[in-house]
Image (cartoon, rainbow, N blue to C red; front, side, top):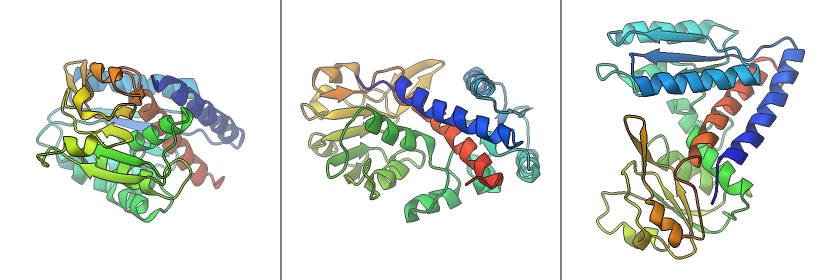
Amino acid sequence: MLPGGPVAERVLAEVADDVVALRAAGVTPALATVLVGDDDASAGYIRIKQRQAAELGFASPHVHLPASTSQADLHRVLEDFNADKDVHGVLVQYPIPGHLDYDRALQVLDPDKDVDGLHPVNMGRLALGLPGPLPCTPAGIEALLAFHGVPVAGREVVILGRGATLGRPLAMLLAQKRPTANAAVTVVHTGVADWPRYTRRAEILIAAAGVPGIIQPEHVRPGAVVVGGGVRYEGRRLLPDVDESCAEVAGAITPRVGGVGPTTVAMLFRNAVVAARRAAGLG
């Protein structure tokens, strides 16, 4: 098993050290959150992040907007956070109500305060190998593989899924020249009729399709490393891309619960503390 909990603990310990240094310099790092509407799961995720912020010593200003909020009202909240020098990172909890455009809202946000790493400017920085906040789930997957000693450099990685939050940025990240990356990366998706032909040859298979149970044992090369990154939720029930029976074939695999999820949250706070250090002139 490749659990994410120990990875997250190590990252958050480093974040906590950075918070101590920032507070000693008179800076309280702040991660602001925005929730639109009354979705129970989204509200729960916000509470988790606020608890983590409190444990780490972050300030965590929060704005809860009604489901009827207009696009302009959401933009005004983000513009206020952009202008607030005491706020270093901003998270808009996704999903937002259907009448609102998340991508338009994201583009209003200051790229340097985008802790999700999904602003077009930050995606461009990633593509060019420039410094900037990294998308949290891809960065968490790279950290998870490195923590568990899974060699990536020079190996064949196949990613099933091309979404903007996971598949595409992960492909760019793992192809970069770095000891924990530098892989031969193939991105395939459900629009390819014979996609299992690609997954069965992967030394490292990463599911990022958001289709519950799409990866079955017959899609996995025996002994391969399998990472379940894509999930859907049915209420609060997590439905992963990777069927649990794949553990019988894989050489190593992330658990159904407690795999990539904890590392994603840890990377969120790492992005926030890096933004605070940058704003404080501490690098």
